[in-house]
Length: 476
Image 1 (cartoon, rainbow, N blue to C red):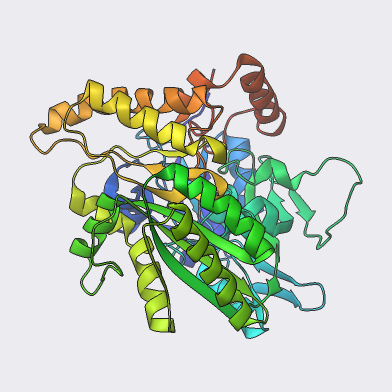
Image 2: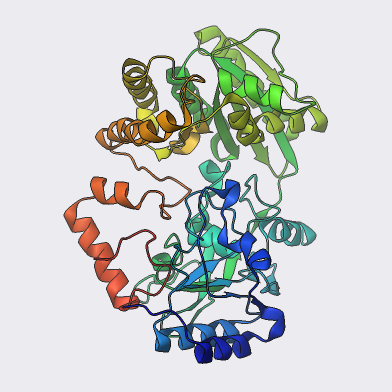
């Protein structure tokens, strides 16, 4: 049973991080207690901001002794409430935002070792400094941090080619729930000496330990990039084109992003300066990108051939290839403006789902039909990473619904969408994590065996349930 921290314990926690590492006033702690968009809000006894792994370990050790829950936090850009405490005030928030060191750059090994508080944009810049690429790209890359990217197994737009954070991390340093430090900072691509422990912590959302540093994979920096927008009739055409793109472009295919007409229209309306590359309005569009170290002309020619064949086959209705860096940036801006587009469209019910790539057309057709039957007037709003089966399926509720109706019906909309996902062998969380948002739903859809395995891992590493309680798994 957890207890509210007493004054003596709070003093020891303050001493562990020093005056610069403690926030206490409501105004100072508010940004840490509140999620993006204020969807989730909680209370905390303190916000602690250790500056080193040793300070993290001391905080965790003290909390373990006193049975104080800890809510780990990195950039606080998550959408599932995984970084917010509950309302009891019994927990402390532990932010890694002061842990900002680049510990090592090994160009020959193509690795970069950084602490958990380094932002994604800073990692990208450090890779660029040594003429390498760190391929994870997210809309929040200026503020999200590597610790959070790892804790949620972040994906983004280039998973198709490079994989998500599980594929991009070679080693971790983790403070365990009892305060011990596991040093797994190994830059090895082959290590078959027992269990791959780092995979326990990647995607665990801080429920098994606190990631304090990581060895990240770097890649050769592309010198040639070809980008196109293609208008298509439906998701089935997208899947057919994806197969053709893989066959023609091979490993150079790096992005294959799908957007529905309303998401594109609202992006242009919401963000000044955005322009559609098409004169006509089309039901669906694709953003396709290929990149390579050399051979820019052949890369562009391959993409042009792909689009030409798609037009002949009726898979593509219209297409444009970016002729300059400015045009490429505009095409990507249309994709990256989807958060603003969603807000402009109206109140949406968000879903971060994945299904087998081949099942995307069936998912869209079945989810659209089920929602339209149950809630006439609902507006489908869909975009995502079709190359890896991950769609952000966020239907917009009718404008004439009251706020009370929206709240009452959101759960039913979730269930309709997630039932289709489950029937197709998919997942209700592709890259955002479960946080506190999807915990109950995960228990509904996961098998008893899977839940038992997850609970066994949790109990083995965190027997007192102090690490980010209420996230991923509910206490029993």
